[in-house]
Length: 112
Image (tube, rainbow, N blue to C red; front, side, top):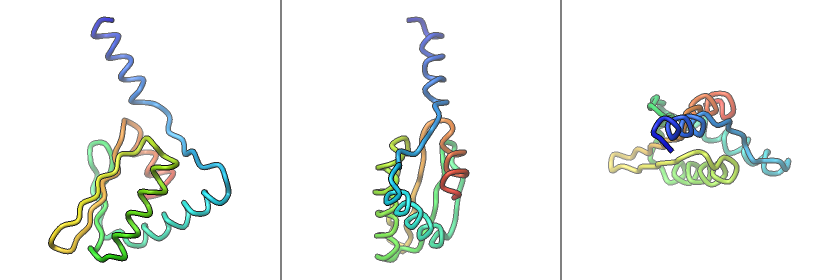
């Protein structure tokens, strides 16, 4: 393949449609509960080139909430990349990133 063909293939992959894998009412309910809890805890939001960074207080309770959020989202939305940082100034940050289109999915589906 030549470079232009590879480039077109990569663009197609980067503009994939994203959809949640949750199908059962129990999983959908859990997702809604976890997202509702985490949204209440967000102290700040910063746009990244390929997603968003959310900041939280650095309590153990929030740490568990963020971890539960990651666990539920990676099950249903395998196209997300998660990066969590806990700093010595009692702050937690969570980056949710991915391919082109992930930011819009975060805004519309997660409403975050």
